[in-house]
Structure formats: C-alpha cells, structure tokens
Image 1 (cartoon, helix red, strand yellow):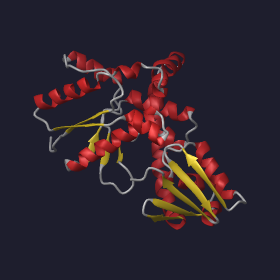
Image 2 (image 1 turned 60 degrees about the horizontal axis):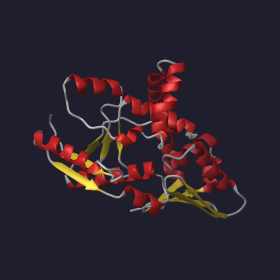
Image 3 (image 1 turned 60 degrees about the vertical axis):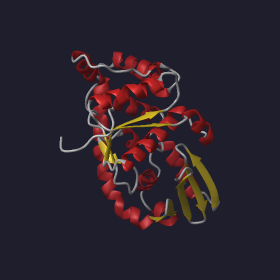
Image 4 (image 1 turned 180 degrees about the horizontal axis):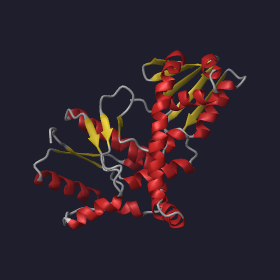
Length: 282
C-alpha cells in the first residue's frame, strides 16, 4: 500500500484486563513490524470532572488521544473499524434520542476530525456486517480479543445492540440493512443541504476564535428549516429538541439567557445575537 501505518491504542482504564489488551495490540504491531503508540487516561475521573456519561467521556478521550498520536506521527488519517452493524445501531440510537436528519445520517465513511482540521477519520468497513468480519477472522484462525464491557446492558448502545435491535430485526427481517441504507440516503440529503446553507451561513454567523456569533435578525428571517440547519451546523450532535430550545431562546422577548446542551455546548443570548461555544474548548 502506498502509505505508512501506525498502530494507535487507547486504554480507557475502565476495567481489569485493559492493560492486557494494550499488550496484545503491541505484540500484533511488533509481529507486523509496525510502529505502536499507546495512551492511557482515567475515563471515570474525566466523566466526573466534566459531568458526562462514561460512554461520552470515553469517546471524547479516545478521539482526542488518537488525534494527538496522529499529529505526532504526522499521519493524515485515523482509520477505525466501525462496521455496518455499528452504523445501524447509531442510526437507531439517534432516532430514539430525537435526532434530526443529521443524526439519522449516521457515521460518514470519511470526515474531517473537526472544523479546520486537516486530519480525517476514515471508516473503510462501514458497509461490511460485523458477522462477515468475524467469519473472516475465524476462517483464517486470527487471534483477537473481545471487550467484555460490550456485553453490559448498563450502556445505551449495548442495550440497543443486544436487546432492542435483535427484537426489531425479529419483527422486521433485514432491518439492519435498511437502517444502513436510510443513513446513506439521509447523508446525501445532508451533503446537498450543507452546500445550500453555506451562503446563508456566511451572512449569519461570525467566528471569533472558537466562538460563534449568530446574528438573530438574519437567522429568524429565514425559513425555519434553513434556520434549523444553520444551528445544526454549529451544534453537531444536537437533537431536534435541542435545536428547538435554541430557536425558542432566539425568539424570546427576553434579550438575555443561556442554554447548556448535551455534548458540552453552551448557547448565550445577548440582545440580537447568540453566542455559541464549547465549554471544553482546548
């Protein structure tokens, strides 16, 4: 292949055996003569400090540390092994939490890590069912490890994976494939709308460092669908209900107020403007 590969591993320190997983990955890297980097961080302490759930804390830490590894190794992409099953679970989970079309589009095959970053996240197995990969692994007698916490129904994704989705699949065979197909359709819609909103975005939003200022007379002068999409662009991962709260704040006769949204976003109203920023910037 015309590129170099570095193996990066994040030890979340959430359970006994995580250090053994890291050693397993290191042995794999050595066997293939590949550079190996491991980072460790206390996810529970991070979750307590930032008042977020373990799942969200683990994800934030994982991508932050992987990005640091990639930057240090001068890599251009982080490649993950998300499968079609992960995509179906993500779409269903986002639907249940009230996400709009952005959330229902699931995970893209490739995207920038964040605004302004040249580093990309690439998911080459996103169209491949998990069962096909396990079949390949077992058929070629490849050694692998399973994370036992993936079986715990304590976490939302695991409840969807092991209970909700199998039940719905029993009622509607082929549901996983249809969820993946729906995600592809919604993503095409999102790509189209993203290009459409750019001119309105430039007129409505000013960026100052990591903060965004939204000019309310312009935002509220658009069709509500366009206003929603502008806010979705600024508040990635927000649900439909979250965006409705922001619009309610924008229309309020009170010229001051603020909202704390999931994912660490804060929106402040100051007269004819909204200030949008992330509470964990930097």
